[in-house]
Length: 293
Image (cartoon, rainbow, N blue to C red; front, side, top):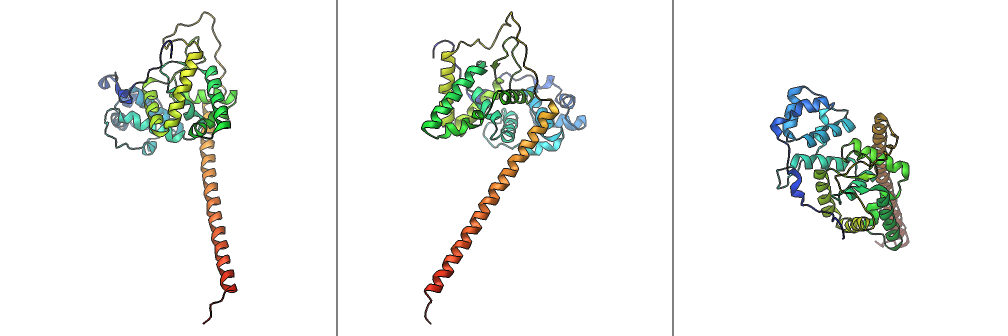
């Protein structure tokens, strides 16, 4: 690729250049961020999560969004038994976010953005990935088509909603002044997500890198360190208030659970009908061919 290449760093660098833990009052930070509990308990929680500012910011966001700031939400954060103790607290928390956002367009977009170490222009990205989705959907239904499917259903307002949600979850950098269209995932988060995508969905990882390469070949994109433009661009209006966003998230989760239950019920009913049909067939066969004594 010509110009400035997209850099792909190793995921083991997640903990490079961490702030000094002893200079950061993690317990008080959690309290100020709206996590509920006495200071001594919150200090212990902060220590359990490496007393790292980024990790604790994500932790407070996670607990507020899905558990009203209560510490019982800690039980939903998975325990990792990998061989890399360094940075494990952040990986645990990001794995919890992955589970909460599983199947949503939010996590699909986040995975794609994690493939670039440079700010990604939103509009060209939509064009590149949607055109790839349509082309592959018409020719072959592979893992990449299934991976991109959540994004294919988004209209303009829904794209804006997803971006707002990711920024409020601190999984996406705030808008860059003068360059509102550029999207960038924080470095340590994108390194984790990039490695997860490479392992869990190699097809999507490989094709996503090719599409991102095409995106940067066909578009001139400023570097990560940007100077504001002279003409100020008005930020897009906030479409959702925080309480509305949280409520919508809860409703989506409830709907997913209901759909899962409905699928299971349909499966059980189908199995029951199949067993009845088999029993009736066996009975009819025995009546037509009685066994003589």
